[in-house]
Length: 259
Ligand code: GLP
Image 1 (cartoon, protein in one colour):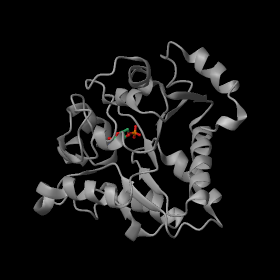
Image 2 (spheres, helix red, strand yellow):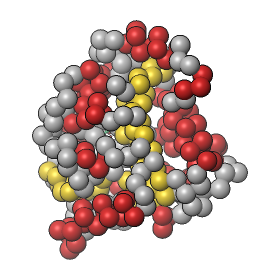
Image 3 (cartoon, helix red, strand yellow):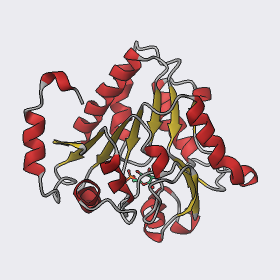
Image 4 (spheres, helix red, strand yellow):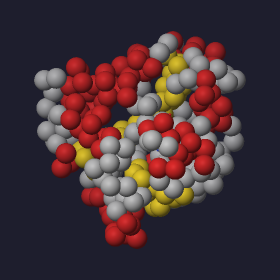
């Protein structure tokens, strides 16, 4: 099963994951990162900034999980813009090496295949950061997504559009379609880090970690992955039945094991 790490705060989670990313980039300067958008990964990017000062990041590569379809890439809420503002610029990454799925309507019929090819050409993703939606989605894989799915166009459920309306002027401006790495794509990344903070994520986290493996809760796909680390604060962990065991196991983790 996944390793569950319960931390006191989102900032502590950010530090923990940032340390792992720094170790990875130090060992492998052309590491391939799987980048997530949304509020959840922000503490990771913030913690990375001081830690990457003095580290050569010129060869680091990255792939975002998803993008809205039909949004102008220069729109401030396109995931291309968000990744540029939150990750590429503050961390000094090479924008040419950081990819987002192409949501342009003209090429959308083959954008999924193109993205899959680019990930394969890069040798796959070393470390994938994931948030989880209140519907249990990872990336934009809404309930019902196949565990074998690859990067493709999906229709957002109303709950997700409502959740993301805070980034737009109104819910009507949130695009209805997205292009997202599939669950099959995500499961091929070598190490998954699923992060969640706050009470609002507690049910999705409990379902993903301890519920049945079901496409009705796409985050439960992590149970099929051989190397997943779930990093949650106390509130997001509050519905986990075995939280005491996870704390005990982490506190007594052999030093040689690493995350
Ligand atoms: C968004 C993104 C996901 C993200 C999730 C949670 O819609 N497509 O990649 O993990 O929903 O967002 P947040 O971290 O803001 O709660």
